[in-house]
Length: 290
Image (cartoon, rainbow, N blue to C red; front, side, top):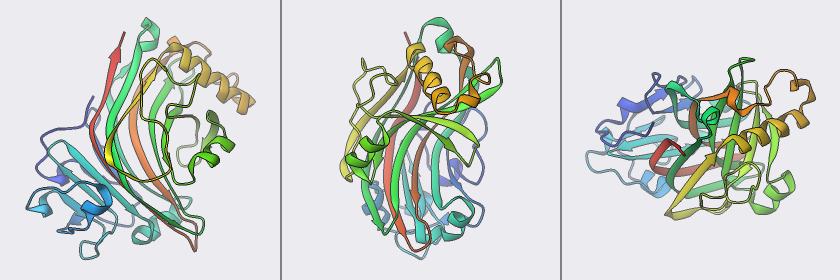
């Protein structure tokens, strides 16, 4: 599974409040209050680090085409840009726990089952995050996710690697470099690792750019590799945080399959706050490796 490399019209891979067709990668603006329309907005290049060729209207979609810097998706060739601006999608945030979300993701055509055969999942991409702005309690974040399903109990959980959080290193360390939490939107548990700083949840044999909290304009490579030891550790961490899940999830990594992956830039902006994140992505892919 990989992002397309021959996009000529951003509309071909962009969606509003729905996943792309199974087996296809796409970019989804979650929330039902806004539509995506072509835009010539030249300022998006400053937000995402991606300047598509002319005609830009073929490569850029915005919730407010006449408003520079509004929430938007860019796609051309093999590059994708995402700009999330909380004030331009305020109605979505009110319906979604104060979260503004655009996801590059894919439901796999067939579930991947590397852990049963001693193999690993290697999820990688190159990203730039040149824009991160907040006021009051606003937060900008980017997380790469697998969704793992227990085939025995038919339960799923999110396994993520945090690459960016505007609250910075001190906040991340205080929360725990590896920890479990609950996702209200999907009503599923989440286990999160911290890029290049987690020992039990990441296969450290594969180098990756480290977690950061400051925007950057240079392309940086991220690699999120998990095998049976990491899945076993994630399940144990999840059950330790939520003992009621003890009988609902298998302890055997061989029982888990990958059904979905995504890259999830997101802003949190409760009433009276503002947040923005802009990023671009190339080389987004999932491989099964020995």
